[in-house]
Length: 364
Image 1 (cartoon, helix red, strand yellow):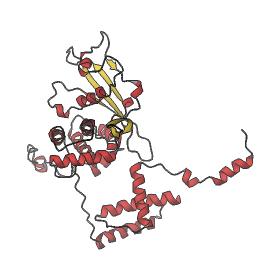
Image 2: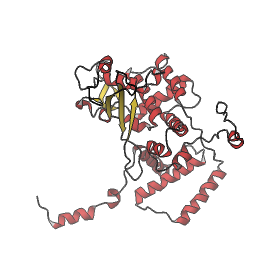
Image 3: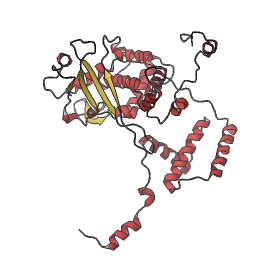
Image 4: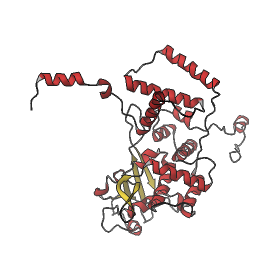
């Protein structure tokens, strides 16, 4: 079909360049922009308590202005003046300047949460798969440090199961599960996906902390393996690698490639069932985590970011992880983000370092 030159001229005249070139923000950022936009269009109830919140609202207001008007720059003089205004407002309204204490959970804390999850009569769910999903989400959050959105976006096409020869020469192959996390936070650029390998641990000292067992539980519950005969865990562990081969890939069913690993419940006429296509929403996960932390007796509110912070501390203290590897895992351009947001502000035994003594890490 051919159109007249006037037709194309009309399209050009009606083109909204501002709308067409606007940057696409994530759901969380869009929620913040909507909140700040409404703040200026109607009277806001409540008040700010910290100077950092005032800074956050100013940053979001800048993005709202850019989105609504297309103006990308602010006069340097105005930026300097606004900085002074924010300082005066913080003093005038006695806004707190100390940073909010952010809880950090380590492997031993996760053990207590998982023990409560599986043993307490107070932890109830509309469907028992939720219990196993929550366990695996906590386990993966701890060992990968990924944000909740990245964890909840995992689908079966992102998972690979492989049997590898035992390095110590045992007949029983080792199981390796690999997960690619695609849905990661980005700013003005796409970030490369990170892939994590989760091997089985010989003579596993703590089954509660083992993500491989929990992952296999969900895989078998979904009848996820392509081989029709592979329906029970013992069948997987009976498999052997063919002579001359270095590995045995255990494929998953192609028809479940798009299925989320972590899924929500749905109500039917007769019962509550797990959806086959709807991912578990963050709005369901957060209350589950908060409730579990409260039942366990955690001092501060429990969320997946507490494991993310614990992961960063653990990797920072590990001699096996370089700074470059840590930045790739966290998807940081450099170490400054970690130092500003996640590095512990509690100092090590500096007396021992200064005096050449053995650090008393058990006490400090």
